[in-house]
Image 1 (cartoon, rainbow, N blue to C red):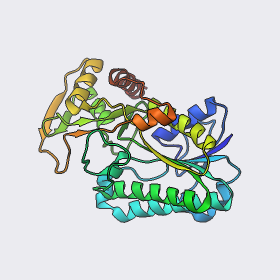
Image 2 (tube, helix red, strand yellow):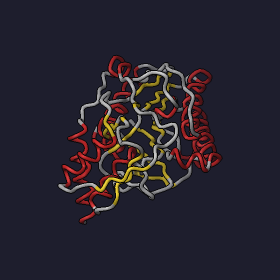
Image 3 (cartoon, rainbow, N blue to C red):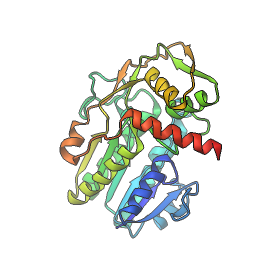
Image 4 (cartoon, helix red, strand yellow):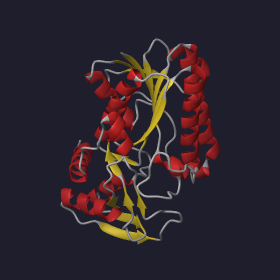
Length: 306
């Protein structure tokens, strides 16, 4: 099949495109940055450029939509930018698909759509009241896709997950806990932990997320004109301190942990149920936190040495 990936030069997109190529699919990547992999056809374009999207999003069987802004903290500072890129950009992609007869879309959503959970583990039909503009835009993006399913006969799948991690995760500046902890411990820097460090979060390896997208693509093509949304969770939350201690073990170095005041509105336990994905997609997380951290630490150590 021919598949278009928006945002395919990013962390998840890079891993996703490799898996799609191994499965024999023809890929076009649309991103504002070039791909790290030279064998990927990459069009340098902004999803807000509606004319360009109409030109590029054509002659394909499906679109995987990863392009967008992802930092929740930044969304609080710059909400309009998130509305423009995430919401208006999604309209641009969907309209190009509609005009060019592409009807299947997979969307990388977020468990941030739930906001403060009423129940743990979170289930798909629990209330969705985002607590930051990032989560709001993700929920709006889901709503746009579901509206195109109803109005235009699209097929849509949204995948919601929390703390994605794994090799090749690079951000500037680095704000995600896993690569930040690895870098700080490796360089003998202070490791900042908010509160006691007993906050439990769901860290899910990129390999498991890629597997879920592959299964979702197969499901979507077999079940047209429907909209589905799934939580992707290990269902085994890990504390922030446990993450730091596991990185210590792999690096063989002691972390200089500095406790900062707790952040307001930071739930003690946050993870989701993956029962729906198990039942419908036949998916479950396979990579243990120990295996995943070991692989990720080894990647970064080799990357910095090179």
